[in-house]
Image 1 (spheres, rainbow, N blue to C red):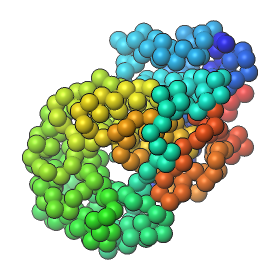
Image 2 (image 1 turned 90 degrees about the vertical axis):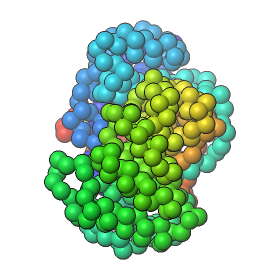
Image 3 (image 1 turned 120 degrees about the vertical axis):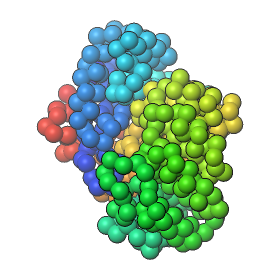
Length: 388
Ligand code: MG
């Protein structure tokens, strides 16, 4: 089998509280008629979607005529031949991730097996999810508590997450990463009220989006220790691993990071320098399906669980589920699409995709989810063209 063509297009809308909802999809065509589709992150703004699309176009000549079943060598070929040009960094690694996902979709379809089977088999069928929540316009402790209780009670989630970095209360100024007394007090009240509403049998994570400095992060982490968080996410910006390690060393609150790290090499750094208790690679941009499994297995050797970041469509999310199913140390997967009315309609597969706070792993050949062409065409991003 040979690769005959590669096309990409950008689909989605920037919905509120969605984490982005603009994605770049890759289709790889073969001389045997098998077509694979992969998804990669467009990093919310959509602008980088066109950078990713251009990168995919630039990689196309390297892949035409190759055997798509050579998923490993083709991934390493793309990554290594452009290392000096940044292929292990964003946004080029996003493009490689989408291509790698499409290759796995082809390999699974050609062999008649779901992708998890190509990764050595599955440890589980149900992928546990946490709901990423927003209280709405009101950033009050009562609103956070009510939203958490509603979603846990009505939708069956056993884990939820809230953001606390843009509450609009007590912020010194837009540039300052120091949390002064009024803002700190408000953040702690938000977390306490939420914990009180859902109790200690439901996991609660808190995301800081790398918006705090080291003293603020340490004060917050220590102040909420008795609230037993599932984790405190990106308490400081992602670039300085030693600063993160300093926060982790100061507290018993579980520290999680990784949605802005790529490939096994960056996760090895996070783990070796003891900067995290939990890692959360975004499997739609960290390198690919097999790279995600490598990252998870390195983490497992450090007895660290993996809780992937996820703002993908059902297709990219199912690709992530194959990774989550194929490693022992999977903890929980993010779900960010609850409030997107067309999220499920965009794709075909075994529906409903989400049930009782879990995603059922697909048993179909390949990734097991396809774009609905009609819906996808209606959601093309800024006049982009659909696949031929
Ligand atoms: Mg985050």
